[in-house]
Image (tube, rainbow, N blue to C red; front, side):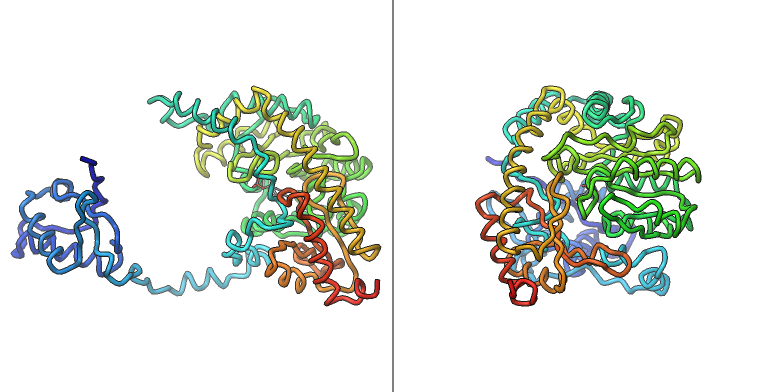
Length: 499
Ligand SMILES: Cc1ncc(COP(=O)(O)O)c(C=O)c1O
């Protein structure tokens, strides 16, 4: 006969010297746990043997209490599936806690959460709204991921799991993985690094958090690209830093404008390979200006290199870190775009003299990364699947990209300016005379997931448009989706209507 798993025991206080019988105490305790919503309808109850053992009493009072709870309809018993809390009971939430004045102060605090950060943190519905629809930026072609290969590596590592695997791992991350990443970065991205400068983190977001905690103090000023990556604002703002938005033009971050606005900023966050969201590749002269500025003022450059594996019209450009002879650049990379985002694996390339500081912060945060998927990923890279996947995906995305560009040109005409199509998995389309927020809201109702460009400005938006991800939009669906978009823009804008 199938063995039925025992449920978890609720907290029941039994006092062996109390006047109330043990049976009564167990009965009352269990009933209270059900009525207060700590144990919910349908939840399995522990076996009488387990509960008696955990309460340190004999089984008899537990048997009697269960019999009473069954008789009164709090519990129900099914042959073969054990005893559960009766499903016919009304669902109850856990007792509501009364909010206090201190938490009210924190929720209404303006600083250190910035406008951008608050906007993001209030987007509780991020995942629900994100959907798997068309144009979702930062979504990849999941259907092309070599799942069979990945699953076979996962199975291999499950088989290899032994008692030793259960211990804490290296807080820097698995050595084999760091070595494969270092080799890849040196070769493909021109990053100057050794494996012992690499710290594995759970994606760029954590990489940024660790970096900010090491390099920045509350009150420091940080340049951010305007428009820029919203999720990063939250990191700096919640660390009490002041964000200084610096405009991005056709050459990338305008370093001269930054110097004019706030020469002594402590750090800058840049996406030089493919600026998010405008898609500009930072020119060589701007790169050198930025490195000069950092050296002169003792500032830090945080390079977010999130999707540079995919370039369509030229060879990948060398990382900014690779041009830096003064160890002023902290390079952050991720597997979210090149593989898949739920993997939650990324890395920081840390200047050699700062490794210990970074590690101390990383350690304080969560001790270190989980071992299992690091080992799977190390084999995936070492056995050549990673580079094969990049090559295959470059072709897939190149096709999606060119169909998207053609469709935008055909449907939206010269009114639409396409930017940033040379690399990555999104383009930025700017249009004059529209309200991108309004159109994006309406588009979402028709399963088109556009990011309105104006939302990515911290200050006043100087351009309106959309970020259109093509990573997860199948080629055959792109023309129809752009036609839908045209109809939507046309009905709100004179620009497209008059065409
Ligand atoms: C600019 C930028 N940086 C980094 C990331 C990736 O973040 P993570 O590695 O935390 O998934 C994204 C993802 O969309 C991004 O757009």
